[in-house]
Amino acid sequence: MSVGLYMDEHVPRAITEGLRLRGVDVLTAQEDNRRRASDSELLDRATELGRILFTQDSDLLREATRRQRMGEFFAGIIYAHPLKVTIGECIEDLILLTTVGEPDDFANQVIFLPLK
Image 1 (tube, rainbow, N blue to C red):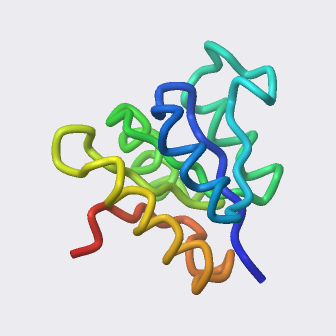
Image 2: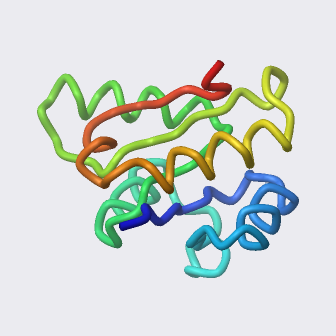
């Protein structure tokens, strides 16, 4: 079973398109009519859909930490700092994570890219 991704609205289109070209199940916040949704709303929506939220927005790390401390379930976040990982590295690492990982592997976790 592959893991689906939910892309926050600030993720470059090149990452989303690169993943789709390689068969990864991706839904963007824009496609889901969630433009300008709060971080909490985005994480709730990704969790509701059973998707892992991919972001390059460090504010979402605070929301994840808050939920971890409060014991509030979320499906998981994959975070890549935009200045520390290339688009190609993001695509390759996300392909790896979504093809070998199971949804339970991501639950209540924050995974940082690059994986190396």
